[in-house]
Length: 124
Image 1 (cartoon, rainbow, N blue to C red):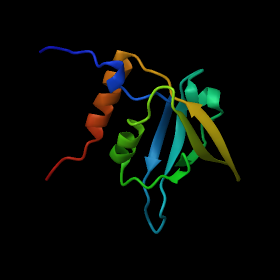
Image 2: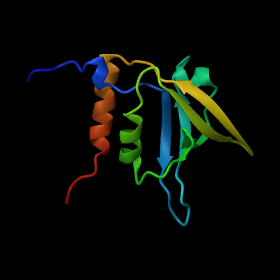
Image 3: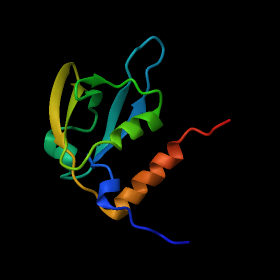
């Protein structure tokens, strides 16, 4: 088996954000991401995101993705250097932060692709 390192152009920008996604459900039109962890000194941490924040929108668009796979597909279109505005719920407040995506290593890119592939819905 030949392993090919992904080129930087094939890899998404990295936000350094670990989350759990809740798609729209039970009469709620919007979904949300619960921030579980941040990469130490990563882009989201530097942008002001805190563990426990709830992301309600990206670049002013509510999170209305059917599942985690669809959200990850959206995140895969973020390019290194792109500034992403996250609208957060932090306790009773709403906060906007700006996170600048950075380039990721080939290893992290492969892990990203593996995660995306693992989330892909199986055809029936």
